[in-house]
Image 1 (cartoon, rainbow, N blue to C red):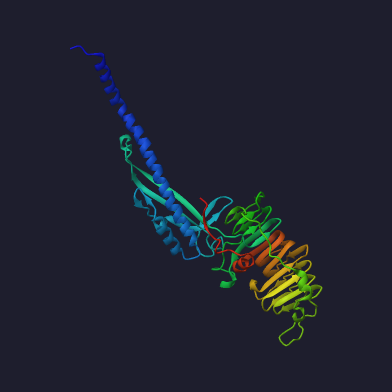
Image 2: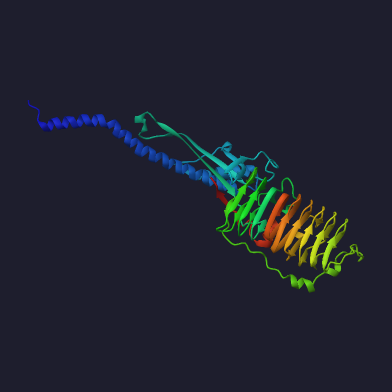
Length: 414
C-alpha cells in the first residue's frame, strides 16, 4: 500500500507532539506552578503582615501577649486552604531604626536602647509546598518564606517642637515616660520622644531620637555624623503644628506674685521680688504655691532652685537663662509647671534640670552643657548641642496638644 501525503503529515505531527510534549508540560509547569507560588507567597505575606501589625499594637503589654496576638491574627489567614502557623521562635520583639532601616532584637528591659521596644518582626515559612506540574521537571515541592516588621507609631507628634526649625549637634538623646506612672527610669521609659518641626530638622553627631523625626511638608530632615539613630518614623508631618494660645499681658495685672517666696507661716524665704527681672543665685530658692506668676525675665545660677507646690503657671515676658546646676520644679512632676515665655531666648546649660512644659512659640530655645529636661517643649526654634537629654512626659504632652493613645497605630515598615 502506498502511503499518502496526508498520512505522512499526520505521522510527522505525532512525532513532533511526542518530542514537544515535555516542553509543553514544562511551560505548563512554569505558567501554573509559578502563578501558584506567587499566590502562596502573597497569602503568606498577608499573614505575617497582619500578625506583625497585631503584635505591634500590643507592645505596651507583656512579651507573651505580643506573641499570642501575632499567632492568633496570623492564624486567621490561609495558605493553600490551611491556616498559617507562626511558631513563637519566629516572632521577635525589638527596635526599628528608620535611618538605616535596621531591626535590633531586644535583650531585655533597659538594654542598649534604654527604652521599651517599639517594633515586632514576624517570619513566616511554608516548607515543602507541593507543586502541580513541576514534577515533570524533577521538582515536586518548594519552600516559601516571608518577613514583616511593624512599628508602633508614636501617634500625633509629641515632645519636642521647634516650629520654625530644629538643630541638634552632639550627644543628644530624646525619649519619653509617663509621670502618671511614676518617676523616669527602668520600666517607665518609652519611645515617644518625637522631634518635630513645621520646617527643616538638621541633626548631626552622636544622637538618638527615641521616637519620630517629622519635618514640615516640602522641608527635609538632614542627618549626619556617627553614631546616630531615629528609633521611630522619619518623614513629613501630615498637619501643621500649632502652639497653644496664651496671653502674657493678663498675668501682668492678675497674678499670685504676692504668695511667692513665702513659707507656710507667711514669712518670706526669698528676698527678691517676682515682678520685674527675677534673678536667683548662690543657693537661692523660690517657692511657688500654685496659681499664676509673672516676671519680665528669669536668670538662675549657682545651684539655685524653684520649688513648685501645686499647679503653677509662670508667665515670663522676656528671656530665660538657667545654668550652674539650676533646678526648676524640685517636685520633679512635670505636670505641676507650665512656663509661658515671650522672650527671644530660653537658654539651659551647665547641668541645669527642668521639670515642666515650656510654651514659647516665638522663642529660640537652646539646650546644651549636659542639661536635662523632663516635660514638653513648644518653641520657635530648638538648638540642642553638647549633651542634652529630653524626656517627654506623654501624659502632659497629650493634655497640651491632644492625641497620643487614640492616635497611635501600628504601621508596616518592612
